[in-house]
Image (cartoon, rainbow, N blue to C red; front, side, top):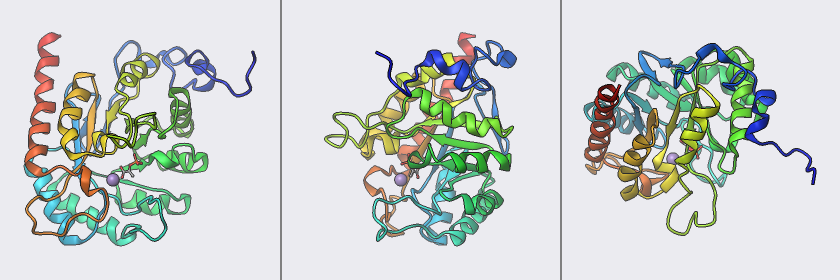
Length: 294
Ligand code: PEP
Ligand code: MN
């Protein structure tokens, strides 16, 4: 049967000529093309750990967490200033004020920062404050947003749509690449599947890492926080992701010291700085194993 709009990985050379390994031989058989963000290298021989709160909630919270993230040995900061929330009555983020706080946290710690943009009208503003721009799961197929973000020339963290196939995900990345921006890092963050919501938030699809390696040269990281939605699962899921060859991790943390209020969003999936330190240690130790096996 011929089905309209059906696409498989066999169609990638036609759909994604810039990002498909088959059509773009420029990067040869190297596993990935490195993406550099403020001195942090994705796709080099050591997994990158990005950590921070779900949302920037206050200057005090962000600066405290940034310093804890730095002490835990992580490479980059995260934090949402514009939050995609299920209901318009939930906390939407601090917006421009949040971006300014992120910049300050980045300057204080020396860690580059990634934050999400949801609105084409705000791409320029977010690009001014962020070292890397995140496109969230809900907006992976917002094509005008992908184009605008591609035009900034800033590195992009492109999360997988929660129901996106590999072809749809790479098709979205191709919109950014088409604007001349190849500094794209893909982020698997769990997909909707039959058991999702019953015992974990989404279904963490680690097999996609290997599949992506075959199809493209873009680095791939994993977000075990949104994938599982359960703090106790984040550490083992992080180790599994690193074992599967992920080029990095995106992790939500909360203070754990009780000196700031509990997070307004995603509290149940936030790990504490001590757990983060163990994850970083595991991820960074992987470098040596990779180096030794070469
Ligand atoms: C986030 O990382 O802040 C986020 C909202 O994640 P996702 O887009 O994967 O749901
Ligand atoms: Mn979150």
